[in-house]
Image 1 (tube, rainbow, N blue to C red):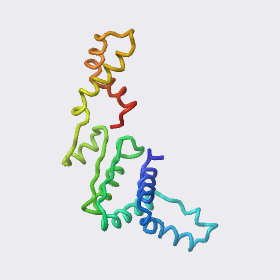
Image 2 (cartoon, rainbow, N blue to C red):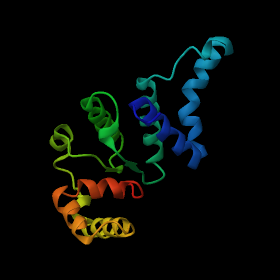
Image 3 (tube, rainbow, N blue to C red):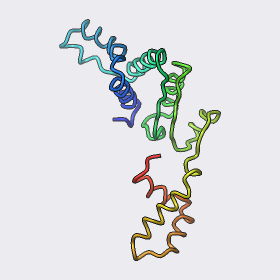
Image 4 (cartoon, one colour):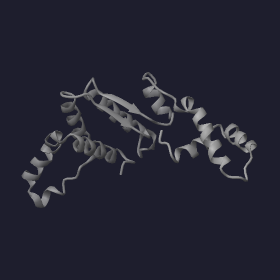
Length: 174
């Protein structure tokens, strides 16, 4: 559901309303008017399009920032289906919706994202947790008696930490 922007938007709206029920009126007011205008038999035919979901999210963020600080954590930005430029345009609209909004985004270093987000502060997780990855790989491989310590060194060195990241990602979501 979250691999496309519409699913991403639905998830954020759901989480916001789930934690702050007072925003349900803001989000559903337009939908309720549509339901009243079209009647219950036709209202279901008016889909929750990506454009409508974006408008609802921006309205919700505009309301929320009046009474609280808002931070959105977006994991795996590069995993969304569709055009990366559409994703970045959505982020621009979200950022522009309120100045106090904070975004924390994780992504592979795709060219489009690097170019657009290069001026923003960043952390390179693989540079911060290298020793933890080494230790995890060592523990995982050492638990199998048929492996020697030489293979651990080769796996970490030759794979450029790619293999260790794959092992780590089974348990740690970065």
